Length: 349
Image (cartoon, rainbow, N blue to C red; front, side, top):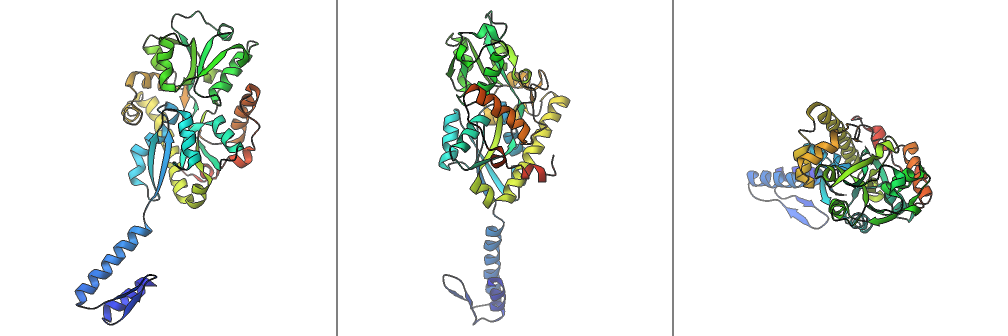
């Protein structure tokens, strides 16, 4: 309506255009009126086609690799959304940011997210971040060879409500033990390697590349990869505030499509180029060095995977069950927590 009125004003110098705030009177030369019209059209087109900004939290771990890969390769090409990655060092800081609305979405531990959902935080999972991706690491000179060797040992975990905590319990139960038979302590992932080197802990379980780094630095050795505790298990997931999803479905679809493509790119680069193209992206967004990144991505190739990111109920049920068994999570209404429509609609998968 406003454009039509403005067009009429170009040919009628005494007409007026009504806006919600005021009347704009058009007088002067035809050229001047055309310039004014062009300016208004430019302003309106900027408003119509402005991208929705989405702030996304993550940690410097390979579990979250699809975020920087998507951002580096496609963010400038998006039509609906402009993603702003925000790196955190601790899980509680990231969780606090999503609760406070300081960020719109996040890559986060699945049990922690589900516990937040159970407590009333209005979030939904829209995609998996990866599958597998962690390890239990012990000191290099340790005589620990199996779960039984962990009895009474001090083990670092990234968070009390972490997938890692549940997986540790699952591993211990394979030899008649449980979390009650070890001493767990929460340490931020970037600090675990130094804690092991300094003798403050006997072992740690965390996402790569920290286990790979401890191994390559001669500080630790891998006791077991979590893929060998539960194959293809869920760990970190992609969540978003429900309000943001409801208000910006097109932006969410565009982003999810890009994340799925990022997963495919990672798998291709791992197998074809030994992660050659991934290393500089990880360095830029996470500050990680080449050797541990390459080690964690390709030794072996299924140590962490990014080619099946569907947030399906059976995969989540496995994590809920072992988390409940470990005593770190109550049951979850997965049908309400999981929003799989963007994955299902995606043409990128």
